[in-house]
Image (cartoon, one colour):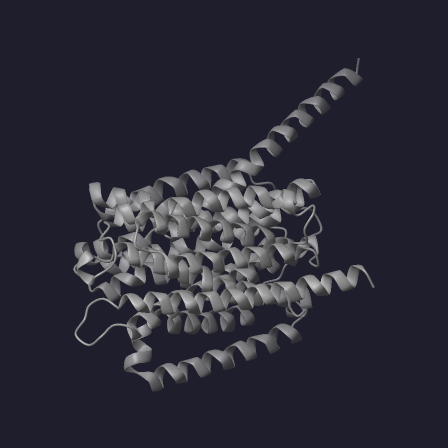
Amino acid sequence: MTGQPVDGEAVKTLRVARSEARLLVPALMFIALVVAAVASLGTPLITSVATSFHVSLGSAQWTLTVALLSGAVATPVLGRLGAGPHRRTTILATLAVVVAGSALTVLPLPFAWLLAGRAAQGVGLGLTALMMGVARDHLPEERSAAVIALISVVSVIGAGVGYPLAALLAQLGGVRAAYGLGLVVTAAALLTAWRSMPEAPEGRSAHLDVAGAVVLAAALLLVLLLAGERNLWSRHLAVAAGLAVVAVVLLCVWAVIELRGTTPLVDVRAVRHPAVAGANLAMFVGGIGMYLLLTLITRYAQTPHGAGYGFGLTTFVAGLVLIPFSVLGFVAGKLTPRIRTRIADPLLLAGSAVVVGGGFALFAAARSDLAELFAAMGVLGFGVGGFSAAMPGVILAVTPKSETSSAMSFNYVVRSVGYSLGSAVGGLILAAGTGPGRLFPDDSAYTTAALVGIGAMAITALTSLALARRRSSETNP
C-alpha cells in the first residue's frame, strides 16, 4: 500500500520530465530565432527611422550598429555567467532586458531612447551560446549535437525572417509598428524561457572577470566602431589609425589578463588549441565573406534602374529576396547532422565555404535578372547554413561541457566582428567604385567586391582543410 503512491509519484515525475524535454528543443530554437531577428530589425528600418525622427541616415544607421555593439560586448559576459550555476537566472534576466528595450523602441520617446532600446535588444544576441549550453547539458549527446547545429543556423537565418516582416509593418503602420513586432516576440520568448529553461547542473561555478570584461568591451567597441564608421577612415584617417592601434593594444592587454587570471572571462589557453584557433580564424574570414555577399545582393536589388543596373525594389520586396537565404539555410542545417556521420566537421566547413564562393561567382557572372539574385541568395543561404551547423562541432569536440557557453560565445564575438568587417569592406569597395558626382557605384564595383569575396572564401576553405588534415593525423597516427 505504501509503495503505490511512491510509484505513482515516480511515474508522474517521469512524465513531467519527458514533457519538459519535448518542450525544451522548440523553446531553444524559438529564443535563438527571436534574439537574432529582433537584433536585425534595424536593417530594413534605417530610412524610416531617419524620416520619422528627422535625423540623418548616418545617425539612423546607429539603430543597427548599436545593437551589434552591445551584442558583441554582452556575449562573452553572458557566456561566462551561463557557464555557472545561475544560467536560468541569467537567461531570464537577459530576456527581461531585451523586452524592456523593445518597449523603449515602441513608446513615443525621442531618438536617444530608441538607441537605448536597440542597445538593450542587442544584448539578447549573447543568449545563442547559452542555448547551446542548455542543449549540451540536458539532451542526449546525439540529439544535442543536431540541436546545437540548428541553433547555430537559426541564429544566422533570423535576419532573413525579421527583415521582410519588419519592412512590411513599417510600410503599413510606420516604424513604431515594426518595432512593435519585436516587443511581442521578445515577450513571448521571455514567457517561453520562464516555462521551459532548466537549472544548470550542480557543481558549476563561474566568477565573472570584471577587469577582463571591461577591457574586452572597450576593445570590441573600438573594433566595431572602426568597422561601421567608414566616413571616419575617409575623413579622419589619422584618428581612425590611432583608434585601431588602441584597439590592438587593448586586445593584447586583455589576452594577458585572461592568461594570468584564475577565473578568466574566456579560457584563452583553450582558444589557443589548434582546432579552436583554426575554427575561429575560419569563422572570422568566412564571416567577412558571407556578410559581404549578403550586403551586395540586398543593395544591388534596391538600386534604382536609373543607375544603369539594379531593380529598384522597395524595402519590403527586397526583403523577400532573403527568403531563399533563410529557407535553404535551414535545409542545410537539417541536413548537416546526417552528413556529419560520414564527413568530418572541418571538411563540412571547407565544403560550405566553397558553396558560398560559388554564390559569389554566380553573382559576379549573372545578375541581370531578379531570378539570378534569388539563386545567388539561395546558394549563399545553403553555404552559410552548412557552415554555421558544422562550426559548433569543431569547437565543442575539444571543449568540456561546462565551458560550452563560454567557448561558443567567443566564437560568436569573432563572427560579429567578421560580419561587421564584411559590411565595411563592401561599403569601401563600392565607395571606391563611385565616380565623382555620382550617387551610385559603377556596376563593375560589384564584380570587384565579388572577387574579393571569392578570395575570402578560398582562405576559409584552405583553413578548414588544414583543420581536417590535423584531425586526420591525430586520429590516425
